[in-house]
Image (cartoon, rainbow, N blue to C red; front, side, top):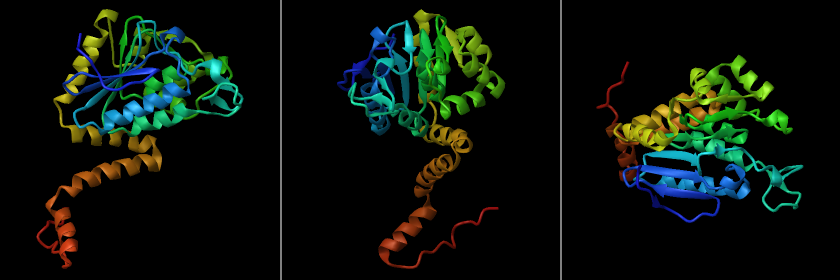
Length: 274
């Protein structure tokens, strides 16, 4: 087991660091199977941003407290007629978690879901949005939306179809069945299944393999995988990352330095590549 150091103070989550490049974000509401309320999602978003801005962090693990559930989705106790209410009974609600989905997708570092127990409903969508999923042998996956009068027509449907095929994704949503870890592996929903007692060890091992690789190459790969699925926003992210790389080139520096020196840039020394 890795040794984790607290990296921030939160009420609904824990944010911890391994000391060798891994951040671990844990949904800490085991009494409700790690269901999220608005406060939970606000804290998750803050922790992901903290990990993004920390240059010592290269990979992020998302998990749930205990071995009973990764996340069981939105806390139905605070679900109102207009969404999930930050102040129960206020009548003013929203879907904070959809912003979190986008944040995970745009985050330029790999995010690994470490799943023990239930990953259902909105919790299932969270793991689908992560880049990789390592599952314990007690994990169970499924959607509950139509059973509780809800659905996810965005990443929860589209990404799931891209990962396991449209027919199978429709089965998951239309029937609201649950699938064990082995079934999830067979359909391509997870990357690996390990005994529960080895879940963190295996997940950390995968993270350390990625930490040994080029961080900018991983960043560009993640943006490339998402470019088509995320439309113009995905292309914009890829273009942004490519521009960051270009900024370090002699050609880009010539343009910048010429502007600062108030002279005409000389790009003649750079090849016009075929």
